[in-house]
Length: 434
Image (cartoon, rainbow, N blue to C red; front, top):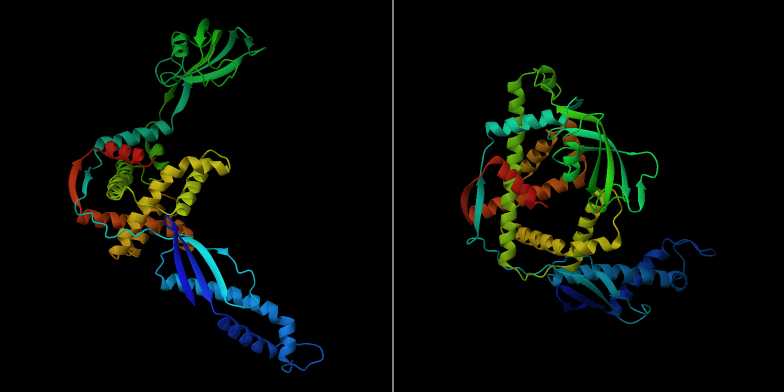
């Protein structure tokens, strides 16, 4: 077998393989000999079919099978012998025109991983967040839980900030009345709607009050006939409501699965959840720093285009799914830049793992799965789900391996502590993940 490797540009390689005709013929003859012992052909006893008849009946089919098997095996052997680290599946781009005689020659295109050399992080400077969950953070979360259970109660007064105002309106523009008949119904939150002039018009009105004002509607207003236009508007307030959060009583506390109904137990549970969130956010912030600095070490690193296209398609599909639609073929184009950075980061993190023999810690994988499971009503069922689904397990393993690489970098880089409040860490991690 003769092999040649051609660099066709970037990380793309063309591997050409030539297999001597004698080797192919030997395999064909051997396969036909085996076949002659098994085939049943009318007029001949089993195992006594003349080779000339077997060749005439099965020769072409057997040669095609041998050629295909030999191509696959020899290509894999060539990749191994040439020490090619593949980043994509080989694509045969030159098939032999005639496999009935002569040497078997074919070529395949593939992309390989870049040669990175030693990734030296000894000079890298990383700031590690130093933070803890304070009592006020627990208080804030407890208030958030109350706000999530709030109810709207009608009040007989003018609206205040954060109140909800329901009203009917009719708009009059140069084009005519909107709507043509009847009236529209709308509700807004005072101080949060972003429609300041409308809020000003409503702030002195109680339920049942009517008014007529001039308004300029925002471009994105829900009624297309009024969006971005000036209009004379007839308003009638139908209800003003204020939010009332529930008291933190035994019933409220037990609704979160706290069986003893104790505020102290609830606060402990909240603190535990916030500490878990803080740990994840701190790790995320450190990881983002490390990735940015790794990319800075090799700004001109070339990455396999196929991997970038695949990552861009994945990002586009995720965004489309969040929007409740199917991704369009052209959507991936907008994500090529971000995808390229993500692929570079993944290659660098993977190379650190490879060069330093970092292996997935299955104990950490188990702990990570258990941590995820604790957020569900039946943790054991979730743990079973993860371990019975190889794809889910693989996702957690990849996350754990990245965390292990981050730990290794922190052990070998220049790390300094940075005092941060809980909210700063959480918001910083949230912004970094976008």
